[in-house]
Picture 1 (tube, rainbow, N blue to C red):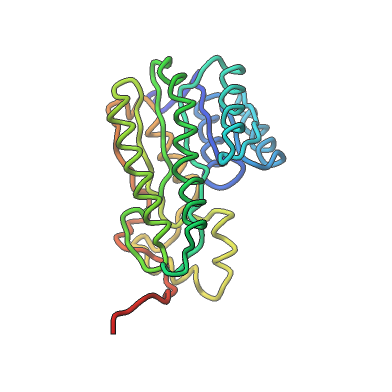
Picture 2: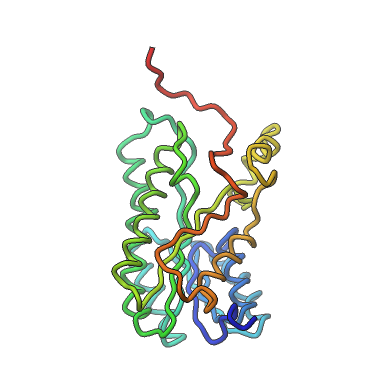
Length: 264
């Protein structure tokens, strides 16, 4: 199964201190890739980088807040200085906020989320693409959400941002084919450190599982394995596509009603 190996490749992974990013860094290291582990908290990324080296690869931990252009500059510069180039980028860091009724969303709140999830993610790509063009097997995976295709009251920001991120993926795939492959993963409800505190309320976890066709939530490792496939030689003829890893969701599995405008 060598077509699923990443030996000798260099992968930059944002949001890699926990959850999906952490699982992806470990998965890629096990598959033979050198990894750049990036997030805002030094202790977490250094712990992840240390675990990656146990697979016999090189790992670099770089503290970066993707909202800060100077952090993005430093992240890419240090990555290229250490490894000589880039082959893979997992554009994972982001977050679309908690459910909020549409008329309670302020301009600043919406603007800040758009910058964090779209402008900053494109900023990372703009800095990485010149180096990816030097690779003979460049691949990018944008981590998105099922909410980009599932309207639900209270999720206006999440829906809009993830739909935009999905379209960015397709646009970049079109512009940079065949030199760089761009694909995305639409992630369903996954048991990450960010979700777990919410599931402590009542029987919320049980309700979400009951509204998911596979009757359970996903794991970060399942998302990481999808990213590995998309970046591996096994997916060398795939670009501009969105892989749905969501337990079969056709509608949102958020069970709590959200107050919203109703025409009388």
